[in-house]
Length: 422
Ligand code: GLY
Image (cartoon, rainbow, N blue to C red):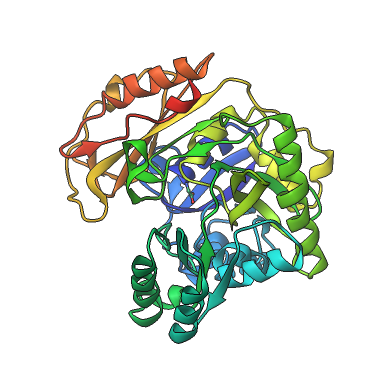
């Protein structure tokens, strides 16, 4: 009997993870709660939403799940791993205490300070007057005001001026823009540099780095427009050298593994440190206790090893004995989105062109749903079109050639994904 594996989430990341897991001869079936139209094609979608912990636990028992792989952000801070483990289900993912590294940025700031992990100068506040006084004390320059809790990727506001920062502080602390997620905020100085997404398999004692990837967070070409969940990605990141990888491991990956273990909540699961490479070396923008989206869509196709075997070994603390192999071929992913995203947008438009996609190009569904024998749009990020190539230039050309074939009313995508890397 093969394994019955559970994922929680509903984006392109979960579709890509289910797709990769199903390549394992040891996986019998993948279940996704709640999943999307793409996971429905290859796996079984289950009804519970990502924050319905008791519903997910009940569904896991009903469907005799024997392995949970955490890839999305919502359920771990609510204790899903702790609850599933109490039911005897093997889990690869952080406990609620370990997931604070992402879900409680104020706690994470303290953790980084205790373990001397390089990050932006900044402080946490839950008092509006104290936050304003701190703001007044800072020299001029760009700042970030961040909700301490999870905010669907929209909780970090870049502020060029003091009045922008004041508005962001008021919206979060006084107007509760992100509900309880912004009851505490973190105010940080900007760190000039370039960003890269690091991912690592972690088993509480050991971290095995994935290749690096670059995510495009702004909605429009050239880094214009609003912050989104991510409009495209490519891997490997331009500018990554062996020296830099060594520095990243030494300065921001190994200390988090050692520090979490020393504080009594070892980190098990995929860790995704968002990194700014500055003139003084790599510094943490934020730790994420999950896989990135759309980074997963470009990274998992490059994984040659069996994702189930690797994560199952990590869940049991046995990562050190695993050899994790990756393809050297670059990959590029283009997010096709609904115009208006990340603000308001219309849905329900018929999606055409999916049958015209090249055989070796991947389309991971996100804001799509089945309708009338086909698919219609149901969200902001509709799908990610992913291609690999012998060179980045080739991967990029194939990805764009195929993304163009997917059409629906109000479709848009950035045209500069991976441009810096060709
Ligand atoms: N692509 C950014 C994220 O997953 O948070």
